[in-house]
Image (cartoon, rainbow, N blue to C red):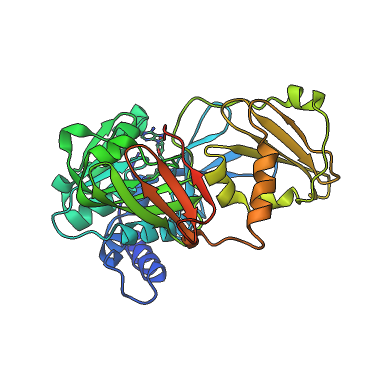
Length: 361
Ligand SMILES: C[S@@+](CC[C@H](N)C(=O)[O-])C[C@H]1O[C@@H](n2cnc3c(N)ncnc32)[C@H](O)[C@@H]1O
């Protein structure tokens, strides 16, 4: 079901576009003012205090105001209630589109079609023929194609693992990912034209890189935080049983740092890690847990007694970050150098603290 575009939705959209761009200087202003977000998000889900999800749609009191506001909207849940697709926060979408620095005639590849809203913005700016968008979920691709058509856009959309790009329509002069990656996929570099710009969430930051030669790129992270859902890959399970058996060690690092000041650098040091937290009845943090897909797991209660199990000692990576950073490290001080053999993130100076990204994205 798609909702109509009316005077009311058009007026809300104009106001929304103006609020996104208070200085009236974005070349994306016309796209945000023209593309009807509600057509792409006919239903979204909000979470109640007890964790259950409620659908919100046309006719519900908060529907239109929320769709035309700077909110990320969860649009699909799996059978466990885990979000599997969303329409991202518009301010972040705008920052990423601006970082993409498009020019007329650019050919764009997007990983993560989702609702189709970003593909519509790209089509509005560059023309349908210059936009290719791929999602791993065939149901989402079908729905996005229908909604794009209803809104008057016909970019090329297809089902597949976007980490493979879409070779049939390469080369691309601009590549954007809207699901979090652990590294830049080789296919992006293979399918990029010389000088192409790649904008992609890596961990909890957004990398902007320029392709300098085949297989090579350099770039740095944008200042903005980013919380994209991860590119879908086999889920890792935490090994809490093994952790319980491990000998405890002391730490001087506050477990809460994992959830805020180290959230981004940890996503570079431990690509693809997952964290969880435990809280008491007053909502106070009592412990955090960390795990990676190789089964390595650590728990860190606020009372001390860190326990670690598995092939990697994850809390040691947190301790290393605490030894490296005094305060909150700025994302835009992290740079990236990509060669065909390795992807290296370095902090402030090329010979400063550095981390290798994995060879699989
Ligand atoms: C934040 S949503 C994308 C939002 C979208 N650009 C929009 O405007 O609505 C992330 C999307 O990435 C997709 N995704 C996850 N893993 C993927 C993969 N390996 N290849 C392509 N798409 C993937 C998910 O299915 C989800 O729809």
